[in-house]
Length: 388
Image (cartoon, rainbow, N blue to C red; front, side, top):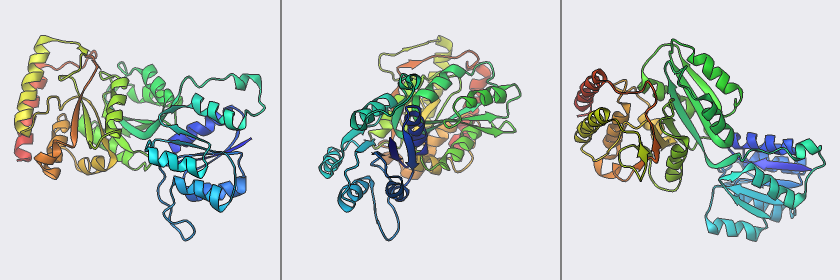
C-alpha cells in the first residue's frame, strides 16, 4: 500500500515517513505542493496525507496554490477518489468544513500522535501485510506538533549537569522540535557529551560549536542565527542547559504564542500560578532587588526578564538578534530594550507576555554569588547608558 505525505516541514515528514515505513507502507514525501502534485500523478498513491498550511506555489499551472487547492486538484481537476487524510495545525472550522465539502476523508488537528495517525490511515485503507513484530511495534506516544520550534540550549562546561536522558526523551517524543546545543568554548568534555546525545536523534538535535568562550549572550545569539536559516521553523526560543525550567513549562510557552498575537512569550519564576518554587531567602532578596532595578531601567513592570526560557516568532528573532549584545549575561534585558526601541513602549506591552512557570528549581552549580550580583548591577548601568 502506497502513501504520499505532503508537508513543507521536513521535521514532520521524516517522522511520518519513518513511522509509516515501519508499519509496512510504501511512502513518498513532498515538502512543496508542486512536488506533491507531480508525485501524485507518477506515484499513484492509495492515500494522500496532507498539511493545509503550505506556502503558496509559483508558476503558470497552479498559482497561489494552498493545501485546499491540492484537494481540489485531486477531486475536481483529476476527478480522482483517492482517500485524502488532512493533518494540520489549522483549526479554522470554515477551512475544515470546506475541505470536507471538497471530499477529504478525515481531518486530524495537530498536535496529534503518530499512533493516532497510523490508526486513522489503517481505518481508511487498511494495514499492509507485514511481520508480526512490525505490527506490534509502538511509537511511545510520539507527538506531531502544530508548529516546528527551534530551541537554543547554550552550554559552557556542562559535562556534569547535562541531563541527557531528558533531552533524548523530549526530542524523541515531541516531533517538530529541534534542539540546537551551542557549545560555548567548553574546556571540559561537554562537546563529547553533546555528540553522544545527538547520535540517537540526528534529525531533531544539532550542535553549534564555538571554539572560544564568548559568554551566554553570544552563544544564544549564534544559536538563534543558525536556526533562523532553517525555513521550516515557525518559532525559535532558548532554554538553560540545566533544565531549571521544565520542558512541560516550555511547551506551555509555545502553546501560548501559537494561540495569540504575542511576539515573545517569556517564562516567569516570580509571578507564578500555584507553583512550588524552591526558595532561598538570600538569593531571593538579591534577585528581587536586581529585578527592581531592571524594571526601573525598562520603565515597564516586567517581573522576571532573566528567566532562561523564552520563545519568539522567527521574524522577531531575526531582528532582535542580528547584532551583538553589549553585555555577556544580561542579553534578556537588552532583548526587551531592543523591543521597546523598535516598537515603542506602548506597543511592546501587547507583544511580550510573561507567563508564570508551574515548576522551577535551582540546579546545582547555578547559584548567584554576591560577586556575580555586583557584576550584574554594573552591567545594568552599562545597558542603561547604551540604550538611553
